[in-house]
Structures are given as C-alpha cells and as structure tokens.
Image (tube, helix red, strand yellow):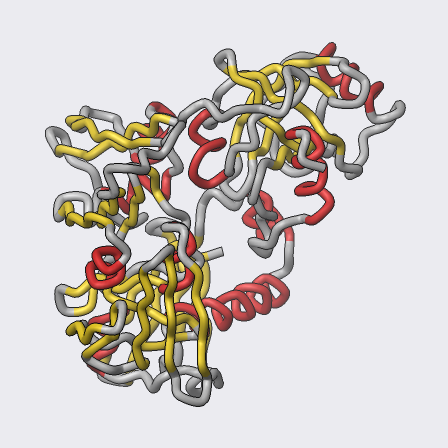
Length: 419
C-alpha cells in the first residue's frame, strides 16, 4: 500500500510519514467508500506491517498518511510495534531515510523482495536473491550463524557479522554482514566479485550494475537497459512522463531519487531508463513467451498500450487496452464488440474464473492469464464494460496484498506450454 516513508524527529518523539501508492486504484477507491473508522483501521493494519518490514522497532508517537501532498489521516501509536528485529535507534533513523538502491544484472533490473540499501557508502543486498540470480546456491548453519554460497567451483562461507570470509579456503576481508527481518544482507561488491562478476556504481541513478565477466559463457537472449536524458517542460508530471516512456511511476521516481512529494521544474534533467526486452524462445507457434511481469512483461505491455488477446482454449480473439495497474495489468475491452466476445468466451457472463490467454503486442506473443469480471474504475467509455478486468503474467501479484494467485500462475504456464 505504501511506496515511501520519512521519519521525523520532533520534540515529542519520532513521527512517521507514510506515502500511499497512487497506483493502487482499486484499494484507493475502496477506502473512499468506507467509513472513516473502517478506513483508518485498514490503514493502521497496513502501516503496522510496513513498519515491521521496513523500519523494525520504530517507536513513533504518530503516523501521518499522505497521498501525494494531501494528508489522508493521522494515526496515533501507543508504543513500539512488537517484532523480531534489531533495536531501533537515532542512528538507524538516518539509515532508514536513505534512498533505496537499484540493482541490475547484465542491464536488467532486479525486483528484490528485500531492497538493497546503502550503509555508509557500502551497498548491501539480500544474499540469497542475488546469489540465486547469479546462478549460485545458498546454505545456512543456524548453530554457527554461517552462510555458505556455492557456484560451480567457487565456495564462499562467512559468519554473520564477521569481517572476513573464506573463498575457496582463502581468508578474504569483507564488511560485516547482518540479518534484518530474517534476510541476510551482504556487501554487493564482495559477493559479486567473489562469484566472478564485475560490479560498478552509477551515482546519478543510484544503481549497482552487475555484469558477467566470464568470457566463456555469454548469456543468450539477455535483457538490457540503456538510459536517456529528458528535459522537463511546462506541464510535465511524473505520472504523465511514466506513461509517455512506458515505465512504472515508482521506477521513474526511484531512478531519479524523487518521491511523491517532489516537484518538477522546467529545465530539470531526468534520467529515463529504456528497457530492451529480448525475445524468448516459445514451446510452439501456439504458445507465448514466458516473460516475468516485473522485469519484462510490464515493459512490453505498458499502460495505454493496445493488444490483441487470444483465448488459448477456443482460439477466439479480441482487443484490449491496458489502462492502469502496477502489480498486474488492469485492462479494458477496446470496444463493445470486444466486450461481447469476452462474455461469450466466459460462457455468457463475466467471471473471476482464470483462463489461459496469449497477449499479442508489437508482433510478440506473451503467455498470460485473464479473468473477465468488470470491477472498480474504468477509462474507456461506450464499450459496455463497467470497470476493468485483471490480466496476469509470470510472477505478477494481487494489488491488495502483493501475493501471487496460484490459479493465475497455473494458467500462465499453460499459455507458455509449461503445464
């Protein structure tokens, strides 16, 4: 629900400011329909989970919930939120307010469940996620608090908090690792170089770039990202620019070190990521590419893009437009005739039932899963469809809790020929 936060120290103690994600339109509309008491209860529950995950141990007196520059509500807290994490301190206030760090491997952005952070000039990343992304495996010895990472003939082992590690039996210095919320965080340069990779830092975009330095194993069909500069003009907004360049708004903010409270000014230089998504092999002509939503599919099928959807089982097709959605694609039938075809495919009435579909966009076919039930807001009028429907891709999630829907993921695999 929340995309950013600030911790402010006041005379009465710490105050937490949480910024709502404006992309979660379904939930925002739902909040607007609720009474104030129910709305605040829901906000409080989500705020508590956010604190446990992002800033454990925070002892704030109150929470201000903001939507952009608008104050939604103020919530009082009676004390620290119980959790299993390291104690919060004035020093960690500064740490928590630092901007997050982007991570790319061979030019492709990684969607990390635990964000990379910059601690006093050292960038830390979640050990398991980065190791797995680089083709390694991870083991853990709880009694000795030892982490092991293996990749091919390379074997790494270190004790949590130690300033040395063993790499293929040799002692190597490293900044100390730590655990937060059950996730082991390690210095990115130590880990990547130990695994034979090259690493560089782009201060302008706050991005760690990891690249494969093994000359004998070039990666086929690799996604890449380049950057271009854009000069802000009169009337520009972050939202409009994210649509213009086919990017998630959160990514455009993050790459430029901005928040929802930031103001653009004429002449300001912005860095615009340009994602080049490689074409992946398909099982057959009938199946679609099995593209990851976070790193691939959302760039091939950005907001305002029109696509042709083909029902995998019946072969019937219709046109749609992606009009909103961050965790998955929220789409609408392009015309009333398209809406009629959708209803017929789903047996004469709209339904939440998931069906395997192929999304054809710009000459590419992507494996996806669709439900047809119209709900919440819509942007296309006169199409006889009151709302939008959900379209899921590999690893996409629900808006309201960020979890994957197993039934949708199964249908995506069917459309890709993997199930």
